[in-house]
Length: 518
Image 1: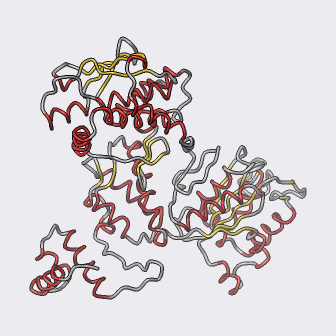
Image 2: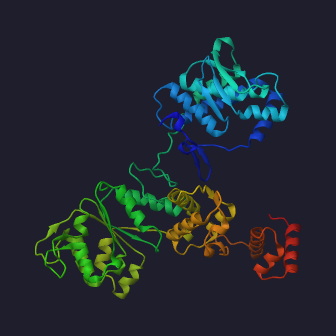
Image 3: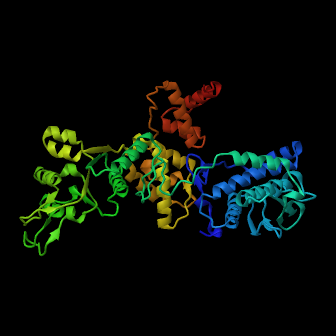
């Protein structure tokens, strides 16, 4: 990657908190920084501002060392300066950090100085100078000073930073910071692209939409990773749309069979008369239309994984044949007498309660236990609401690229409603809802009106957290205030939606203001 190709996407991550190169970072208002800078300048002087910048530059260089393996200290230093530009320290730059100088335009520090203190009499980007010095020291090890020769705050067209030998001027605060920084432990390498919210890693491609921050999903993904290391048969259960096939793909991609094919069969979509031929293959002339020999899915998945979806819909007669294949590891094509050995891993999935099917006799007990060597239960989305927004953001990015729409996120109201909705169709319904929202959105982010009506008008669903029970008065208060906020403070509309009179609503709101929350 060329330094000029770097964008924030390479090392800035937005999730539960902001991460810069894998390390936690903060987004701070420029004016707030400017006010703090003025206070430090008045109380402690320029030297402390330079020392503050030095720490920032040192840390920036450390982070950039994990973005890409830069071939030389010069590339590393240039990449770190580029990182400063992306983070907002300045708008653009040209030149290099040497005796000739780095020309910087749009310095945020110069802008804030002029805004708060007026035009400067001399160069005053002391924090930025210290930052550049920290980058040079960390990248090259050279004990040089970075000084500002020209400054936008002093009326110059651009800020110009040049290097000077350290012997020319020694900043005790900066040198003290350098000693402390060398003693710090090295930062962890930046997480690879295959790392998800669960913290799981894989050198192979992890299937689309396998993200999750809920405890239930983290445990499921960890279990899937462990199961992938062995060649056991797996039974995946869960409601329709929860992502059972994606779990199967994750197991396949993380296993030693990853180089082989992944063949998926929906058993419910194939008629009983054709399923045997589809799974086991057939010989030429074995039935009308069989004009040539044809291998089945078991043979097509040789060396890989065969995913049997909706296994609970298979007829009792086919269950017997499947049991034999799983036991003997051999298939017999329809119309043939000889057996063919197979080398395939079987993963089955169903949204039915197979234990109930065992009790009513519609599913064979021996096949059930043959399939259930390892069982994985995928929880429904309504039980892992922490995963809704991470999944929605992933779908938003996917469909934004697909539809060539620059939709960057969700409004607070839309995000809140996504979390509140029950999602009976699980991840599949969420995916469809986000696709629809991207198609309808006319803004940079998805608004509440862009969501499907069933999601948009859904009332908040009461949720018990850790089995805690709260007083009804507290729940009523939170609910009324939430509806009022959604209506932009319109009490008449809120009262109508709640089915109470405006006088009643007014009285309750007056009581809420008089009685603060605990």
